[in-house]
Image (cartoon, rainbow, N blue to C red; front, side, top):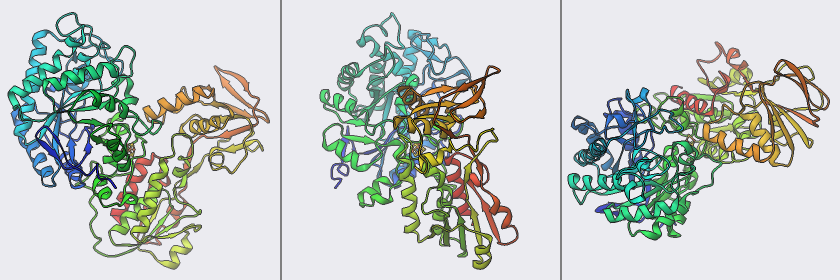
Length: 640
Ligand code: SF4
């Protein structure tokens, strides 16, 4: 079925066994001096085991001043070679090829990361980083060109099969290539040929130092999606120049930091959304072209290649969600693939919160040496209360370890509150994880008891050895006068289709649930108003998810009142306080309550002293992100 995906192809002299590529993704797993860690190596090794043809590492800084994150690798010093040699050696054991992406962040970094002023072609701050960079002198440009060549040579010495020059996403090379950021008036600015001089000199320096036979991939943004930035026609012209300069493949991505939603797009962005950029580049070069961008399905990878749009398909976040995707696809085990759902919580979201990267649907990402499933020493009877993602994860892991596992779910369906979150627009992929977990429960023989709430009576009668309490949360009902009126409903009931909603709706609460419910209703033709007591709505969403949500709300004409606590609910509206004065908002037919959730945790106390081991996880302990709840479930499965 996937005959193109599983056919080999060369990039220069490097033969890649299949067309599935792990692109560079910043995960922040290395030491701050750029040396490799076991975490970094095991993370890549797991992907190699999973069957990826080519792994492109996250950005190796060519100079400490070029680092955009503290925990990325570096090859600016010979002393760094040894640790990274272990990485290439362990990846090669499984037949994957590994290429080091080499880069300089330029102005897309900050003083607090590199300890000095960032550098750039021109002294214009990146709108995202906001720090005025030092304008590079020609001598300094020449020095960085040499550093790229030296770095590539070190990569070769470390056993890498090639390098990928990072010319995409608004980093230093991209800054030179784009009139958006390059305002120079010397030989490195102005015309396109001048703007491309810097990368062409880098390619030539790498060739001179690392050899003509050392494969070079060049990554470029097809369109930068910023006013005045490069577009696809500029990219095609540059691609021709790059091929002429001797690069062996071109990897077409999109965006710069100021258009981050293009670099790491959420589920609101269609699958394969920039594959047409790769196809355009492919029309003008004869070297292989790699595409990327929200492709999370190997069957889609096959259709992209079959349609001639690209030669290789990079599936970054799909590889975080399931490093074994290629092997499962090759074996036809599509139901077994844990698909990326485009939530951004673990990958970019964790980084934005200052943590190493991870993945909501795969807590093992980045913890490959730590979260290891080993058979339990003693087979136990394990009960799990609650069939949300945390409870299911605990049940799956416990069953994989050989325990007899019973999952109790009080309703007739799995997924809990999380599954309700799949209902609003652009959230449908959330269900893929629930369905995957359900498949895994069946695969590992978990006994699922639907329509059964786990009670103390059941526990006393059945005498399990351990209970995992994953009873989740329930909607919070604030004590607002009028909350019991017949026109008041809660957001979950609206999303589940349990209540009728009139044409004019006010949603109380502009957090994730309230904003997404408003989006859902406005997409169903309702006139919607959100009232929120905080200064902004949807602040608990990941940044790029919020970007598209806000656009949708605006397009649908949703009215938003912020800094507006609700004082009273009326028959046909609400009274809010704005700037110290009470104002009536309405008229409205229905008032939807979406003011948060609270833990459902009574079972925890009730079980005290009645069962040898009780572990409470997820929302049952404290309302949290699904990312944290699923990880807690995984750890509970290991702990019983
Ligand atoms: Fe995909 Fe979400 Fe995992 Fe990121 S955290 S890789 S978006 S499933």
